[in-house]
Length: 423
Image 1 (cartoon, rainbow, N blue to C red):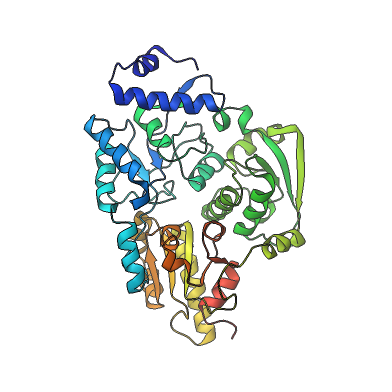
Image 2 (spheres, rainbow, N blue to C red):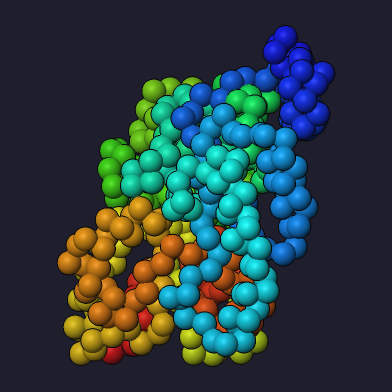
């Protein structure tokens, strides 16, 4: 890798041994993927995926102590993924004991993050690009982020440039202000090797469509045709919420870091089909294909017919508009069924900044009066508790389904279940 004079000096120890180790790590990382140079990080803020003080990552805590002792701080302030625990989320005594042990170092770790460069005390969300959070990069910005759904959204919907970095690597890029130049940072790396043709008779479920595409194309870049006919050609609140959930499913059910939507996402609007490689493969999605994909999901509950005990919505975190829309849908459905409260313990998760704004609305009281808990928690971290993993939990998130024992249902199926099943 060809380094600038400044970068070589850091590698040679001009800023001390710890900075030299950080630079060496990034150089080795870049060379592994064929990078020939470093490029400056141009976004205002970074984002890190390792937000949880879980006991099994002791090495991370030790690393943080080493960085702090050497006086290392990040050139970029950064947001972080959601916190793992919230006392307001339903749990029993045994689950609470396990949480206390699993996430015992959480307070210590958050103090470490603050010393390195945490953006704010409440800057914990997987959707840092929400307007209420304040970490929304500009088109063309070079990022040093991790968190598969956030990287996916930033690349695809915002037109920023970021590779699917791992935890700690992304923080090192923010500390130095440089990242290796390869993959999704390059023009060639952003070209599509798949054409996905949407040929459905109704609007595809975002999470299900994303799952189908992710499992088919894996880490490749898809160019998607026909979806604009269902979600429009404007990146408004509804379209962005749809793409947030769609993209998270492509990233977790596969390894998609970037997708293009014909006539909608920034690069597709500007460059059109010139983004498609000449030898691109074609994947056609119709109603039958979506049904096939959904039917392929394994149910790993001990009792497949168990009554759900908990429902999680918001993986990734829900937008402000989604919180309002779901409040109205719940209110109407409960009224239709002659009920006042949800029949299953239900948790809607969102970013702290979004929740703060939502609490100012009439819908917040309506939602909580219906028995729904609004939380900043990471549902995945909750489900990693082995005592929680044994419970029959339902979700509309394909990401949560993929990584945990949660069972996936479509939005309409979820709405029916949490309001008391069939009338």
